[in-house]
Amino acid sequence: MRFSAVLLVVLGATTASGVVVKSGSTCIVTPISATPRAVHRSIGTVPPAEPADDDTPQILDAFKQCGKNGKIIFQEGTYNIRQVMNTTDLNKCDIEIHGKFVWSADNISYWLSRSFSVTYAGRSTAWLLGGRDVSMRGFGKALFFGNGQVWIDQNRSQSNQNGRPISLTIWRGTNILIDGITWRQAQFWHTFVAHSQNVTMTNLDMNTTSNSQWKAVNTDGVDTWNSRDIVISNWTVQCFDDCISVKGNSTNVHVSNIVCHESGGMCVGSIGSNANQPDYVENVVFENVSLYHSSNAAWIKTYPGRGYVKNVTFRNIHSENVNQPIYVTSCIYSYQNCDSSRLAISDIHWENITGTSRYNVGAAIHCSGAAPCTDLHFSGIDIKPANGGTAKILCSNIKNQATSGLACTGSCPGSHPQQLQGNV
Ligand SMILES: *[C@@H]1O[C@H](CO)[C@@H](O)[C@H](O)[C@H]1NC(C)=O
Ligand SMILES: *[C@@H]1O[C@H](CO)[C@@H](O)[C@H](O)[C@H]1NC(C)=O
Ligand SMILES: *[C@@H]1O[C@H](CO)[C@@H](O)[C@H](O)[C@H]1NC(C)=O
Ligand SMILES: *[C@@H]1O[C@H](CO)[C@@H](O)[C@H](O)[C@H]1NC(C)=O
Ligand SMILES: *[C@@H]1O[C@H](CO)[C@@H](O)[C@H](O)[C@H]1NC(C)=O
Ligand SMILES: *[C@@H]1O[C@H](CO)[C@@H](O)[C@H](O)[C@H]1NC(C)=O
Ligand SMILES: *[C@@H]1O[C@H](CO)[C@@H](O)[C@H](O)[C@H]1NC(C)=O
Ligand SMILES: *[C@@H]1O[C@H](CO)[C@@H](O)[C@H](O)[C@H]1NC(C)=O
Ligand SMILES: *[C@@H]1O[C@H](CO)[C@@H](O)[C@H](O)[C@H]1NC(C)=O
Ligand SMILES: *[C@@H]1O[C@H](CO)[C@@H](O)[C@H](O)[C@H]1NC(C)=O
Image (cartoon, rainbow, N blue to C red):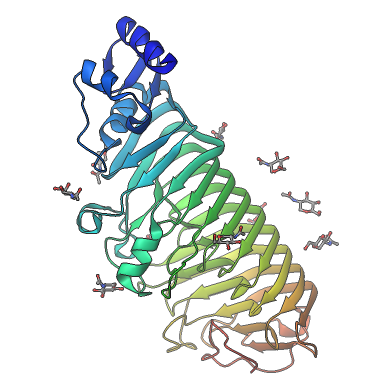
């Protein structure tokens, strides 16, 4: 009663389309599911019968009306999103989300064919968000629910299905803040940052866990690519794939205060997949990170390609039951041409890396014979196998091995796997 009365009063005084209410430069959006149908009827937007209610048109309308020099408030309740969203032309826009965004699960073929390409590796996304001076805050209340279980089950643990959409992509954004949002059951990667600058992503909570016999795959927390000046802080992630992944042409990335469960950990890569295009990664810090029951903790993975990884620091990284906490490979996935890669890895610091490994490997580092790693620095490395004994430290082609601070116990073959299944 109170709700519809307020809405009708406001509607009387302002221009409205859908149930977006605009007052000054602020758009207030109410989910169809929380709106008395009589209000819709009175303004001629009777939604189709459940379950096909689709909030996408009014969400896009709010961005159109208030996406420049404006504010958009998504009120509490459930917003059903049944279509792709392209909101890349924002300018000075503050977005507040108090409700739950739910991406549809009954229309897989729609998403597979209509998700927007993000060019990287043939991947695509359900939502492109970009522009200048944009904040999107969820106050710890906003929930993005991707219905990921359906995505996991329909593709039966296979990876990189074309068209399977990344939940949110920051695309050609400058000065972007994403804060206080929770993701559950993402469709694919939770987030992607591409062609963007000065992006801050804080206080995010992600968890995509399969409850069937099929596994969550490609459900990375975030991947960054062709972007610079990125701050990632205060996240909790359970994702069964890379937790934080810094991909090609990422510069000045600061990652801190992250807790990852069941993940790939902190990684640089994969990079260098395209022999015709160099990939550069530099000035990256990962600090104050805890990882539980994950495959790796602090790792660099490259294809035998071109470009470089330099000036990367992993600091205060604590592992519990992580398969092999420190890992470097020059030939990810194929384990071929490991010693002919020209992708240079230099000036990398691992400081205060502690905790337990699930198996008997603390570090496995295979640098390319053709481009040995230079200036690797290790200090405060204290990793113990969870089941007792001493952790092996395997090293190959570290140019400054004698001064690196790493007490290598043996060599690391190019074929040393990223996913350890047991003691070696
Ligand atoms: C998204 O919208 C922008 C601006 O309106 C437009 O230039 C761009 O082509 C759109 N992108 C896609 C993939 O539709
Ligand atoms: C799926 O999406 C297509 C394209 O928008 C639409 O024509 C179709 O009605 C949708 N199906 C369902 C079940 O919503
Ligand atoms: C699942 O994804 C793979 C690619 O990873 C693709 O080859 C296959 O066709 C997909 N299966 C279905 C049922 O779409
Ligand atoms: C970077 O973006 C933030 C918003 O997240 C903004 O407050 C800050 O002024 C921007 N920095 C620069 C140098 O523009
Ligand atoms: C993630 O969700 C699963 C399934 O609901 C739950 O068992 C697990 O404890 C959650 N992880 C975290 C870190 O909360
Ligand atoms: C990180 O979380 C802590 C504790 O909740 C909070 O005090 C701090 O302000 C947060 N940092 C950022 C950058 O939001
Ligand atoms: C990385 O940046 C370089 C130099 O700007 C460019 O040549 C290359 O194509 C980029 N690589 C990728 C994979 O985008
Ligand atoms: C290395 O990266 C750090 C962190 O981004 C930065 O402060 C420092 O200036 C960089 N060093 C060089 C030599 O570029
Ligand atoms: C990381 O932890 C160290 C030691 O507790 C602390 O001094 C430092 O400020 C923390 N860094 C960040 C970015 O929170
Ligand atoms: C080492 O890292 C742990 C967290 O993993 C932190 O508690 C401790 O203060 C760090 N030690 C130093 C000397 O910074």
